[in-house]
Structure formats: C-alpha cells, structure tokens
Length: 145
Image 1: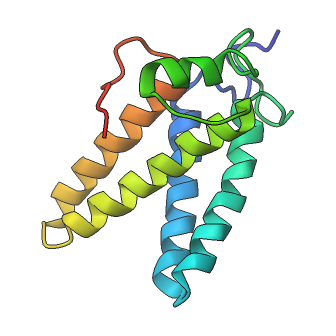
Image 2: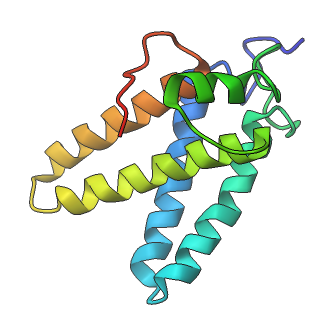
Image 3: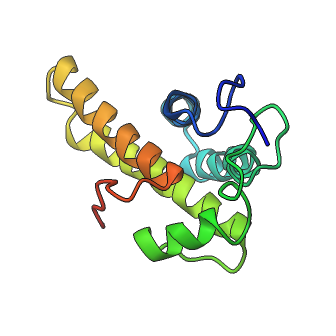
C-alpha cells in the first residue's frame, strides 16, 4: 500500500490537479498551433492514454489510491456520477479525460473576451471539479453537460 506522503500519490488533489492542467495546457497549445484540427484531436486522444494508465493505477511513478485507481472501481464511479460511456475501463477513463479537455476548450473560447483573472477563475473551477470527480469525492460539482 502506498504511503499518502509518497511523491506523485494519486490521493493528493495537487497531483491530480497538476496532471489535468499539464494535459490541458499541452493539448491547447498544440490545438492553437496546428491547422489540422482533426490531427490535433487525434493526438489529444492519444495523449489521454498516458493519464488513463495513471488513473487506472498502471504507472508506477504515480502510486495509486488502494482500491480506487483500478479497473472496475474508478471507471464505474465515472459511469455512475458523470454518465460517461465506454466498453472498457480504459475507454471510460479516457472519455472523462477528453471530456475535461473539450469543456476546457469550450470555456476558453466562450470566454475569450473576459479578463485574464476571470478566465483563471473559470479554469481553476473546472480543474477542481474534475479533480474531485477523479478522486471520488461525493460532493464533486456534479454538473452534467
């Protein structure tokens, strides 16, 4: 069992927050730089596979929450709470990661005329919502789109 003080421990909200922010930043930077949006989207889904491995407890650099970060547990929570679909645990977790990215992009586009501090507040709120969802917090925001 991993100690809760282990580096990159998936029970630490800061770790999950950083993973989501890094993924979104990388994908959004690519999206802004590429003319081919279909190729950008394909690469986003490909990059999501790294987070899927982490959140399913399959990356030893990120000690999992025992009895949470594994197939049949975290993915079932995502189905029950977020009504995410997918035939396998990997597909379900990937779909939540990609949904997060799509909501982040939509938020940025919808609010591009807002001041930076407003966009930062909205970004922080979205990251916190998905962090809580991926940690299994029963009081995650629960917003369905």
